[in-house]
Every structure is written in C-alpha cells, then in structure tokens.
Image 1 (spheres, helix red, strand yellow):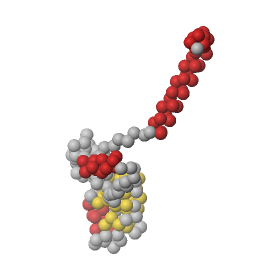
Image 2 (cartoon, helix red, strand yellow; image 1 turned 45 degrees about the horizontal axis):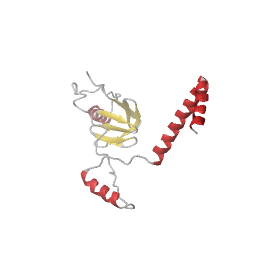
Image 3 (cartoon, rainbow, N blue to C red; image 1 turned 90 degrees about the vertical axis):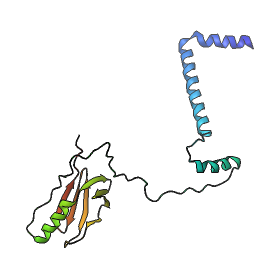
Image 4 (cartoon, rainbow, N blue to C red; image 1 turned 135 degrees about the vertical axis):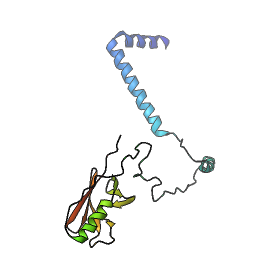
Length: 176
C-alpha cells in the first residue's frame, strides 16, 4: 500500500498543472467544508446583562425553555438629538424664510413661522422647536385662522402650509 501511495504522489507532482489544479480543488473543498460546519453549528455567544445571565444558565441546563423578550415601543435615544461636543452651537439664528403678505392674520402667522426652528429631518419626520412632527401633521394651531401643517420634506428644508400660503424652513449648516 505504501508503494501505491508513493506512486500516486509522484504522478501527481510530476505535472505542475495537474498538481496546481489538485491544490486548488483541495482548497475549494476545504472552504466549502468549513462553510458547512459554520452553518451547521453557529456560534452561541451573545452579550447579556447580568439579570439575563441567570436565565441563560437555566437554558443551558434544560433544553426547551422559552424566554420572553420585551421590545420597547419607543426608541430610548432621540435620533434628532444633536451632540453639543461634535456640533457646538455658535449662532442661534436660522436662515428661515417666509413669504410676505399684507393681511394682519397672515402677519401673525408669519411671526409664528419666524419663531419656528427646523432642527432635523429624518425620513418623513422633522424636528421643529424640539417636537417631532410627521408629514401631514399640524405644526402650530393657536391664534391663527388656518393651522400650520407640515406638507413636504426634502434634504435640509421643509414646507409648511396654512391654507394657500406656503413657508419654507431650512436647517442652518453647523459652523466650524
């Protein structure tokens, strides 16, 4: 048997192309074999809080225990919160623009819009004066004939409308 193996080995290494093909096929086979092992036995490690470690210990001891998992309904972290260390505020004024009109009710409306500050935009939501408002929701309703609604969101600006009047709020780029 030893002579037979030696003869096969000599035939294999005698031709460089055949030996290179053999090595490449062996390498691909080992990769596929390792992939099957990883799929069949995934790692069972996770980071857990100390309270959960006791549950994991009982899970290891017995096989079929279900552990209830509770998900929060609201995010714990506000995605619109700006980090003061990364973006220090140097200028508190915004470049909000509003359309001009001569009506007294519209003048009060414009004063309210001038007081609004667009802080962030994310998807179909915007943060205006610290409140998260979705597209179509009312932004402000007091002391004006038509409520201000968030109509359109784009890039770094939003459109707020009251009746047929439209106002644009934009985000001031951080100063460096």
